[in-house]
Every structure is written in structure tokens, then in C-alpha cells.
Amino acid sequence: MRGHVRKRGTWQYILELGDQPTKRCTICNKRHWVGRRPIRVCVKCGGSLVDRIERKQQVKTGFKTKKEAEGALADALTALRQQTYVEPTKLTVREFLEGEWLPAIETTIRPATYASYSTHVRVHIVPNIGTVMLQSLTAGHLNRLYADLARDGKRRGDGKLSASSVRRVHATLHRALRDACRWGYLVRNPAENADPPRASDPTLSANRAWQAEDLKTFLEAVKEDRLYPLWLTLGLTGLRRGEALGLLWQDVDLKAGRLVVRRSRVPVNAKVVVSEPKTKRGHRSVTLDSLTVAALKTWHKRQLEERVEWRGAWNDTGLVFTREDGTGWRPERISQMFARLVKKAKVPAITVHGLRHTHATLALMAGINPRVVADRLGHSTVALTLDVYSHAIPSMEEEAAARIAALVTG
Image (cartoon, rainbow, N blue to C red; front, side, top):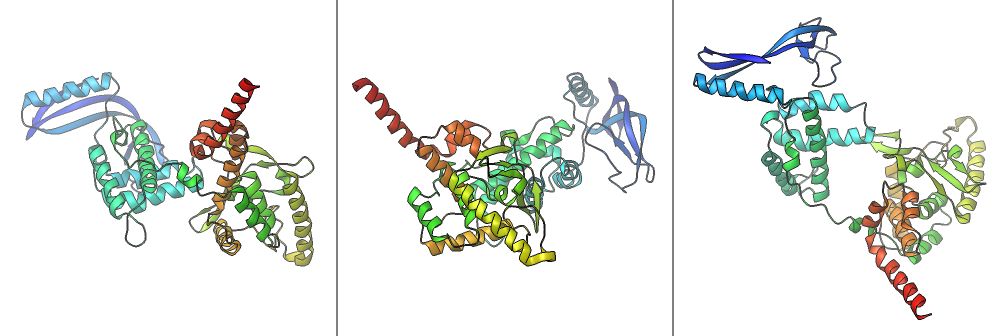
């Protein structure tokens, strides 16, 4: 690690970085230094690359005096020794996110997650800070971005973006800039010092759940609906919408009264894709009650009858919950149908996901061990379950207090 200064109009320093592995394009001869990011093809022309070992230098110009250039060189050499040196780049935020980051992570994450990231980049980040130089990006830039989105960031029409939506944009930026640090573009992640809006209370969404009487009223009202087994399964197992729609008959053991969650059908842009659960605990076995088992047995018979009726036009998807021709449901369509049924049943309005909240809330209020509830829901930790459904805890505390008092008083 060495370098020197010289005068070329203004003073400049030349930092010797030594022989380093590179890839050169066989078409345009552009050089791509290895180590910053996964390199597959030339970013300039798309040509194939060949491996090389070449001498690498870093030239920094614009210093007014020799002493200033020497001081900057000394700082760069110190950073090299401490392994905190970052090579200057003229990449903008847009060029990094669209040209480097998104292509590099596309095959490493779930399709739904990639769709979310790319939407955040295209709709919210690039239009606002896309022209900022990546290495000039600060927490101040990000805070201004969040303020602009909170004031007028809605994708369609006018209006502000919710705090939770702004925080999701922040999460995307945090992940992208963390990768920029790992790939040698940044020394530190400016998102670490940014101040996104405070998250809304996680119990608010959980409060959009039914009481036991509401669930009973709804299930009684939809008993003749073709998808009654689906509504019952969602309410009595706490499965997510996509998990229920992704169930295969091979995942269900009606004799043992259990099902296994292995996949989920989720909407990604205009398509429906099948993906694995987000976490390891998302892969789980869920015990079925006798009412759900009976409903699924009846449903299986009905599905076999529909298969005979459709004959050669039947689509053998293996899915549990299907249309009359055997094809799977679009998740959005299920949500629309549920909303109409809720209105018809004259019960408080909740979303399909509210059935999951209902299941968890009723289980905790009934005194079911939170560990069991977390396992049924596929939560990563019991703490997450207790945080989200803390509104159900007071009844548990009251019961505990009564039981302890009974022990003392005999």
C-alpha cells in the first residue's frame, strides 16, 4: 500500500492498490473489478467476461496545495490499513439500485419480497433521490424523503403515505444500503442514522378481530356457501390466506386431524406465485379440530363430484380449495368474496386476515399457552405473538390473579 502526489493543473494523489483480480469484457474491453458485487455480464454492453489480474490505482484530483493532497493520501492509506477504505464512485442512487442491487438479489429472495422492493425503488425512491450520488447520500436525504412520502407519497391519487408504508420503504433502503456497504461502495449505512416515522401500534390491526359470537354468527350465515370449509379452516386454524389457498391434499391428514403448511399462494403484480413460508417456523404442522375435519371430509367428496362433472376439463392441481374446475383461487378474489359475505352476515367488518387475528385472540383469551398459539400461527417468537396480541393478555392476567388468590384462600 503506497502512493504519491503530483501536480496536473491541480494537485492530485495516486493511490496504489496493488494487483487485483478483474474481469474484462470480451466485446468492449471494459474493466469490472471483482469483490464489489456478483458480476455476471458486462454492465456496459452485456458481453461475456474473462478473468484477469491487473494493477489497480486510485487517482483523486482537485487539491489546491501539495500539503492538502499529501494529507488526503495519508488518510486514504490509513483507511486501507484499517480496511475501511472505500473506492470513490460516481454511481447515483438510481444506478446502484436499478443497475446493481435489484439484479443481484432477484434470485436470492422470495418473489413477493422482490416485487415489493422493486416497487419501492421505482415508485418512491428513484423519483425522489435517484439523482443523488450514492456516496453523498446522508441521513438527511432519507429524512426528507420520508417527510415527502408522509405528506404526498400515495401511489395513486393525492394523499399521504401511511407511517407503516413509509417504514417499509425505509426497510428497503436499509437493506440496499447495507449491501452497498458489504460490496465496498459505502463505509457506513446512512439509513442507520435516519429517522423513519414511528411504527403504528401492532395491536391496532389485531384489534380488528371478532369476538366469539361474531365468528359464530358469520359461520352460521355462510354455512350454505360453497367455500364454507375455507372460511371455517381460516377461522379455526389461524392460517394466512395464501397458506390456506396453497394447501395440497397431500399436506392434509384427515385421519390424524393435522395439516402441514409448506407453501403459500401470493399475488405478485398481475400473477399468482407459489412461495415458501417467510421463516423456518412458518413451515409447521397444525392440529385440526373435529368440526374442521368433518367439513374438509365433506368438501373432499364435493370436489370429487365436481371432478366427475367436469371430466376432461378438470384441472388436477392437487389444491384443497379450488374453483369448480379444479383451478386455484386468486387471493384477491377470496378477499372480495369474504368482504361481501361479512356485509351480508351483518357482523363487524374485518378482512380475511382478521380471521387469523380472531383465532389468535380467542385462543389467548381462552387461556391457551402463548407458545402453542405462536406455533399454530407460525410466528418466529412467542414475544412477537404477545406483542401483537397484548390486548388479549389482561383477561389472562385476571384469571391468573383469581387462581393465585384461590390457592391462598383455600
